[in-house]
Image: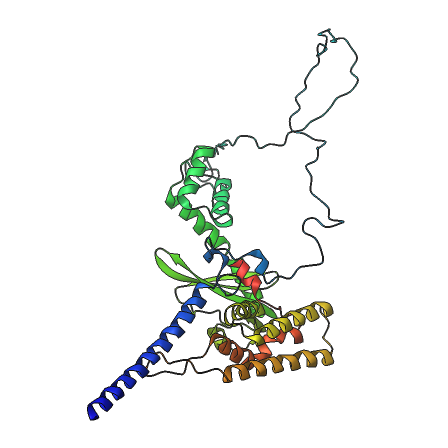
Length: 407
């Protein structure tokens, strides 16, 4: 009898262990499904990461506007028009009737029909030779030479136009060096070495240094600025591109470390709640609510949590309220109404998660894991002032999408 009791006890222990494993695997499956279902419409992933599985346009967070697509009434269109001063005029003489072949060479001219073709002339290299006179000065008793222009330093060199187009193609249109060399070879018949292109970039970099410093100073002291960052590869190594932008200035900062933030900022910084931004000294914070809407969309679609729909609806109503009042302050009574609904929605969501069974721990140590929706609720609760700052300050935007676009 004791042997049977021992066997049953062992089996029950084994079953309990297996149940724990199943719970852990189920939680892991849910987490993996959530990751697979993430795209640019319900997370912070960029559209370029969607691949062929683009999210349908019907799930966009953008609401339908009151205007139809296309040009609006009163919009001034741009149409190619004839000019009164063409560069070249080609006359087509009429010597005989195209129908009966009768000569009309002596017939009086009744009028002219004009048609103009706008085109670009074939590119051609223009070579300018600078000749500096050499003379003998009887006063100094030596030979002297006239000065060349400041940019003419070598017996043979490329000019400023080629240098400027090289920099423009590389940094405005992101043409790689090898393709840029091919472009200059095909269009102009000139061979630009990699060292030459690098030298042109250095000249532009040095010339823009004062401009860069002025932009940084304006961004630092601006009342509101948007912050964001992204990783990219340089020479096979990960670097971080940081951006700080206002309505009229954008400053870029590259560093091998993600946490290498810009010092000396003041005013309000709007960002996506990356915790390192909260280490900035002397600034107030505004959180990107477009990120919150994406996260809420994923929770609504995947986790079916009812509070998320209420919060998404509230944020959209709050944005419309901000747009309605423009640069004016929102009336206190309306602010109180929006804030009350915000607090009530969070309270409902937290109660919803309190009733949920706890998630199994991944290991023997560590904090108790929380569901994605629970973590978002806690963020919305603890950072309420930053989430709703756009309601209290008309200068603070609803999102930091401008910084994302500049990246």
